[in-house]
Image (tube, rainbow over all chains, first blue to last red):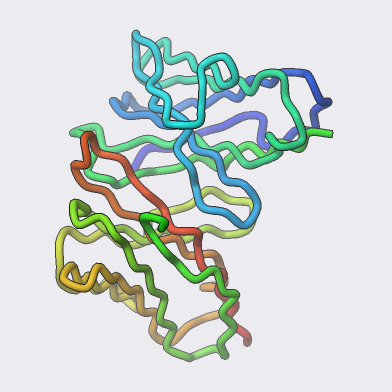
Length: 116
Length: 112
């Protein structure tokens, strides 16, 4: 399984500011995803980060709010823009099997954001 | 109706007990079924992975899938305090693209 490093691990942010979360994988992976885990709730897929092209967003998530970069097969960033307290959550980077997605996912430790 | 239903618990058991965790789902296209374990302030880690119906055993853990009932289970034998965590079921299949859907997670406490 891949080793996934995320930073920051946690941060406290002011309303209206933006924060970029970085995800570094120790091997090249095809499938990379960003999830949100709100307190007491399930993991919700924000978007699939596509290398060399625009990310694919799930219903309810838009590029202006959550811009994503994927410059190569080992790195991605997620920006949470113009934050509000409702954005307080854990954001998780995840990678799938390099041979194609059969559902097995591996996760980073997560970035815990608190918006005041 | 949510695609995946999972009782959030919490579930508290004494050390050594057999634990049964369950999920139901509604989408018959799901073919891959996973259980993840998530310790506090950590990311989820893949615990068990099964394809289609049947059982899979790995040490103290057994995963069962009943596609006819759209019901999956995870059994933990001889539970240990170190098993205290949140357990998330997850499933995927070709539903216009492979996407993994997670249950809400069940919090488990194993008391010494």
